[in-house]
Length: 170
Length: 285
Image 1 (cartoon, rainbow over the protein chains, first blue to last red):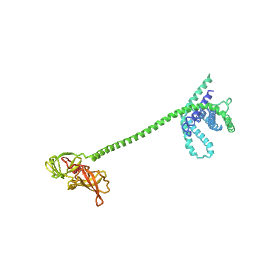
Image 2: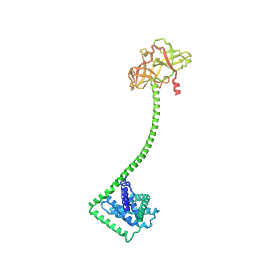
Image 3: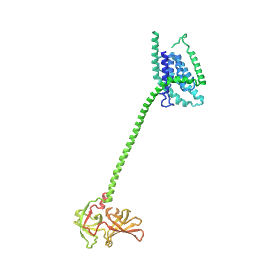
Image 4: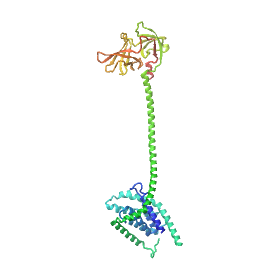
C-alpha cells in the first residue's frame, strides 16, 4: 500500500513538474520527459508489472489533460514500461549506463511513435526538422536528467524495499 | 522481482488486460467524450493544486531567472553606456578646446575690432606750419625715444599722420590732410576699399577726400572709414574719419566721399605715436 501511495505521489509530482516548470518559459520549448524516466526506472528496478502500471497511470494523466480521448499515451507508456521490465534481470543498483541507454532508446521510440501518429499520418513529413528541432533535444535533456533523477528513484526503491522487508519479518 | 505463479497474475496477461482497458477507454472516450468530464474533474482536483503549487514555484524561479537575465542585460547596457560616455567625454574635451580657441580668437577679434593694443608714447607738437591748417608738424621725440620713420601718429581717436623724418630729439610728421598723403582705407560696414587722399584745399572746408569707393558698395552717411590691412605703413583698423557726403564719379564706376576727420587738426597739441611699425609686426607674425 505504501508503495502504491508513493508511486501515485511520484506520478503526480512528475506530471506536474513536466507540465509546469519544464516548459514554463515557452510553450514550444523542450521539456524532458520526466514521466518516461519514472516509468523506465520502476520498470527496470521492479520488473514488467510495475513498469507497466506506472506507465499506464502516467499515460492516463497525460491523456486526460492533453488529449480529447483516453488511450494513446496510456498505451505507449504502458508498453515502454512493460518492455523495460525485461531488463530487470540485468538490473544492478550501481549500474548507471544501462538506464541511460534504455532511456535513450525509450525516448526515441516514444517520440517516433508520437511523430508517426501525430504528424506523419497528417502528411507532415519533414522528419529532419522534427528530429533535430524536437526529438534530439528532448532525448538529450531526458538523458541528462536521468543521471540525477534515477539515483533518487533508486534510493526511494531501496527505502520501500526495506520497509516491506521489515513488515514481512514482523 | 519474481512473481509467484500461483499468487500473481502473469505480466503478459496483465499487459493484455491493460491493453484491452486502453482500447476500451479509447472507444468510450471517443464516443462519449462528455462522460469523460467527470473523470477529468476528479483527477484535475487532485493534480491541479500540485500543478498550481509547482507553477507558483516556477513563476518564482522564473522571476529570479528573469531578474538575473535583467541584471545581465543591465550590465551590458551599462557597459555600452559607459563606452558612450567615454566617447562623449572626449567629444566634450574636444569642444572645450575648440571653445577656448574660439574665445581666444574672439578676444583677438575684439582687440582687432576696437583698437589694436599697441605700445604708444605720447608726444607734444611743438611746431607747425604757419598757416592755420597745417599738414606737416614737428613732435618733441626722436630716435633717442625709439621713434622711427614710418610710425603712425594718432590724435585722439583717429589717425593724424605718419612720421616721415626722424632726428635725435624731434621728428617730422606729415598729416593725413597733406596733399602728398594717400592712405589705403576702407569704409567700415560695407567693407569697401578706398583711398583717403589729403587735399588741403578741401580741408579748408573741413573735409578730406575719399576716392575710389566701389559704386555698388552700400555706403551711407556717418559710416566709419578706417585704415585697411592693405596699407603698408598704417596699422589696420585705425579710424580716419566719418563719411559726410557721397557723390558718384563721372566714370560711373566709383564714388567719391567727403570725410570728416576724427582727429581734430585745428587744435592739435598732444599726439600719440605707435611705437610698433607695421613692417615689424608683419615680420613678428
